[in-house]
Length: 124
Image (tube, rainbow, N blue to C red):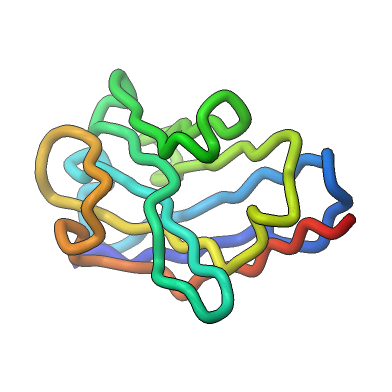
């Protein structure tokens, strides 16, 4: 089992940037596909992006494509979400998740391990 801890959330003005980090422990990090999801108040948790074991493949939701970038550093057991040009609709709790299978996936049910989340608020 892998344990995940997110950090880096906060309050930012519209158009600003934030970088989220997720650090893993308890298992071989490089064997997991990693995903980022978010949940706004009153809404379902939705897919943001994912990255494959090696970092060679990524996938993004249409709403963040071109603004957000996922990367990982397996030597540091960490995955990152660089968020640029933030909009009010990006506000929510951001979760990282681990999937013990190859290839990035946007399906929440395929991720077994989740962090506790970090709040991101983009205010105009």
